[in-house]
Length: 290
Ligand code: SF4
Ligand code: SF4
Image 1 (cartoon, protein in one colour):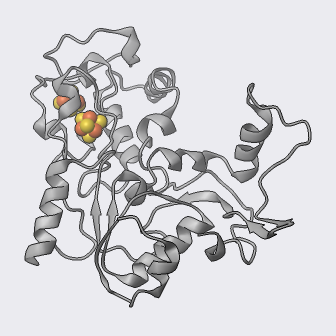
Image 2: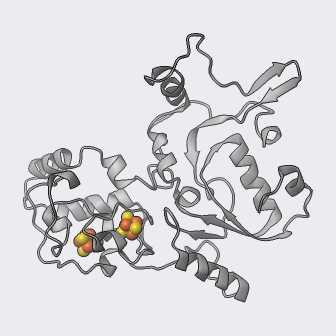
């Protein structure tokens, strides 16, 4: 529904039966909306990968606000900014004070911001999962609070590719090889995240000869998808020499964060790269811009 923030602020607490909250929390405005909708909703669902795990925006947690602004407002070839203008949270104009949301250093998930009742994973969520969630809510047959609504198997469990002994001497990027269409992609040296990923999609990508990139997040019981993948990869490499195993992973997977945490860096155990700066927004930058 379309709605104005001031209208939502005036609603009674818990008067919204169900809120499907889409998107990660990067700015003070998003944080304000998360808190407001938590207050107004009986059931709050983190809807989709961004709300659940940070998704692609969460990859920016390898950097910080200053570096992002520098890239966006100075470094990109198409930027013309001779006066070095960057967004301000407050600006005194003739018409009065103008405000913008504060841009935090760290992307957070909805669950890192407010209490979340349920999670619907996926980038994007699958129609079946959305339907199951709505039916469960309407019928009052909800799983325990905090549950992920969806299938609890891995993409590998849904995949018809033939698996035998996984022993590989190196990894290939997808553009370097044409898979044979029947052998497990991992056994062909192609990084496939199926072993750690929730199978809400029914194993859609390997069915068309393309590796799973993890868009439905870690399966039940997988605490950290990158750690799970590293364990899986170490066991398929045909070597007992730790140095050779490290070299094969380093050369074959040059971007481990982008490969393993493409959809869930913000929600992972790592969360972000080391950062010691302040995270608090200046007063007045949050609610009033919503
Ligand atoms: S690793 Fe990928 S290709 Fe291999 S069985 Fe699992 S989902 Fe299928
Ligand atoms: S196979 Fe993996 S990447 Fe493809 S839709 Fe399913 S979960 Fe997403």
